[in-house]
Image 1: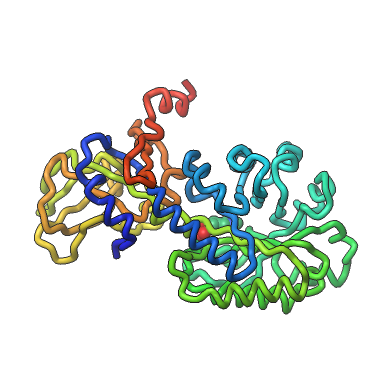
Image 2 (image 1 turned 90 degrees about the vertical axis):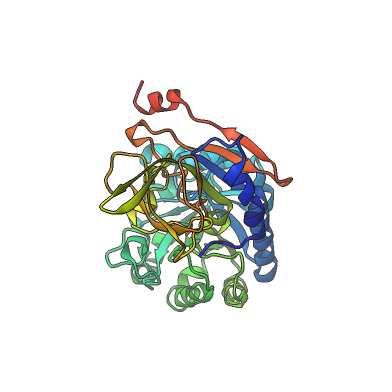
Amino acid sequence: MNSHHPAIDRSADILLSDPWLVTPAFVYDERVMAAKLRAAATIREATGCRVLYAMKPFSIVPALRMMAPGLDGLAASSLFEATLARDVLGARGSVHVTTPGFRPDEIRALDGLCDYLAFNSLSQWRRFGGQLSGRGRGGLRVNPQLSLVKDDRYNPCRRASKLGVPIDDLADLARRDPASLNGLGGLHFHTNADSESFDPWLATVERIDERLGAVLSRVDWVNLGGGYLFDRPPDLAPLAHAVGLLRSRYGVTVFIEPGAGFVREAGRIVASVIDRFTSDGRQIAVLDTTVGHMPEVFEYQFEPEILGEAEEAEHTYTLAGCSCLAGDVFGEYSFREPLDIGSRVVFTEAGAYTTVKSHMFNGINLPTIYALTASGSLERKRAYTYRDFLSRCGG
Ligand SMILES: Cc1ncc(COP(=O)(O)O)c(C=O)c1O
């Protein structure tokens, strides 16, 4: 299904035919981002939570600077992301971090940059909790052991998960040795992926309330993670109920940190057809992009959305990336008009987990970054060159 966001419809002509746009291009639409920020403001007002953006799906700096005033802060997964978060936010807004990869040599720097640090295990809490400069900033990521995601590759609550302290272990520790949690400031969980309903958020909070009441009554903040889409949230009531429960019963500050929900629809990758031929009777169209620019297409073997594709239309192509990898293929797509060499192909809904994961396999350059601004004009933000490749190669 293609997105029907009005801003996307208006921009189609520019993406398909503006000669100034050099492909492959990654184009983010500031108007779509502004709409997401308005949706986030509605969520904040309706539910009483604070809204962070989890930087991991997309961290293009000028876009982060544009988003920052509409956010309560940024959520990072590493020292580099936390450094960028603090740089973008300045003194305004909070920086949060959680990762299974906290390193002893980075704790001091993270302590200086972040307002909230959620340790991923009791082992990390024991080793690093006492090293933080202020009380109450260190928390624990909890695994609520409530599986919401069917595909285990995305499921933080899979069996023997590496993500967070199993809820029963924490409840048990709070009973047996409450002093070991002295100084604990908060709880964090993140358990979902691309959920369009907020019901699972409430179910998760109910489970935490039921099993971890003794811990909740000792902390100041709870971070409910991301994994929820929110442009047209079907119903805000479950989140409002969840946040209300935590605030009224435990007096905590509640954060949410969606990532993809803010950016997926805002980003598009524009490619050009650079070759066409037949193979085993199929029409192959080779593009000047590659799955290396959208690695999840290959990792998870899904077919990305393309503007103007029409099932059962007359002209069908296998759209292939331009690297040497045989499986560097986007899928079979049909269009009403034939594709020629030079025709443009626009991948919609390409804002999340693309630029941050892209690489230069085969020495193929990264897409040039453009913004579609509030006035509808195209602005080039960053073009990569041989020097970027050389530097990645240690040169
Ligand atoms: C801890 C944490 N918070 C937030 C997110 C953002 O999730 P999404 O982009 O699905 O909203 C993730 C994604 O992996 C995560 O691991």
